Length: 486
Image (cartoon, rainbow, N blue to C red; front, side):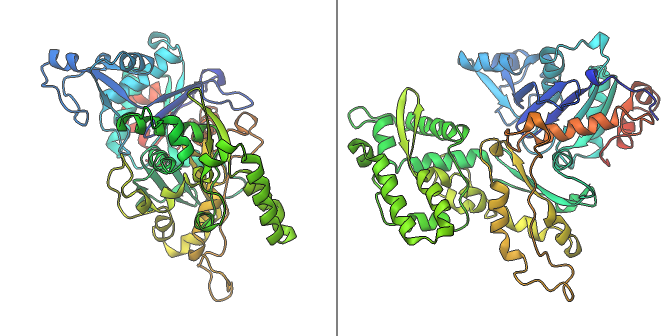
């Protein structure tokens, strides 16, 4: 049992997801944002592979002879890619596990010693690592061994990332819920019952942010104003270059906060609405404002007084002008369909750059994965997070509306005690001042910071491994001395 306590200023927080690593050092009264945010990828020069005796493997195969120092990480990798060097890219956490410990070590080493400025010989910092749920016991031991034997940390603990995300948003005695984490290529769904993740019910859906970007890029091809500006008829762009430009525009639209989540059925109603659909003609005539005002008047004439405020807001968002690569573009309401693939992956059929998908969406795993008697409690804590939520608000509410068929419309509390009756969505509370208006995508780092503040200040030291613990019992110690039940 650990008896050492650490100064808050020395504690290191590392959040490791499938596609990114966020980190920071020091705990404060106001829990702060991560200071480091890098893609969870490493690069390897093909020349280095040849020198080590390998035959130039594909990017999906890990070279057996590569060392930690052979890998390029962070800014070094960015510079190599910018100069068009022959680099193989690896994502060691992309499949929801640690596929290569040498690559993982290279990433964590870069964060600790290059970005945070720590020194291995004088390491006084404990590390709280939040990582994907469901790692094997052997994997947890291997990670613990890396941090003690390679990084010389003063203390170490592992926290499963869905629990860290959940800890950031719960209040009171609320211990059950479900975390929906939308990453680049996957969406992970983790039910939590009575404070523990239900591992048998965890599932992953192969749809993520990249699919939403590709879908919006596909929709933008129907916007004649955008297409005529980016690829004029007199000098059209090559197809590959046009696709890359449209993807960059889709990312720009998302990062600029120009997207809202449509309620179920709202997109279909929009497509059936009568009115102007040729945005190019509107722009040429300079009638954007007139069209918006005219549509508002029509809707307000039909709407009830209670609906007029909502109609005004919807109509005002139909057209928007944005600067992209030195050009002014006018976008229509197609941008609000950005999140549709999350709820209906069949929309991705035929979209350029999309790999084949399983016919699954986010709704069915939420309802069918857990035991019947757990579902009513789990629905009281629906939390949608991930990078996509940093710039799009209301995803949780949109998802809760789409799972309404699984909820009793006329609950009978006396005769049906287990059927879910309501859905409650969660969000990062406003009293975390540094995280206010940052979206819910940073919940994992916030929750890890909260647990680190509790664990490393505990006098009993039951929730982390100290150097003395590791020296006496080895890597296996982490299985019984971490915030997660390993």
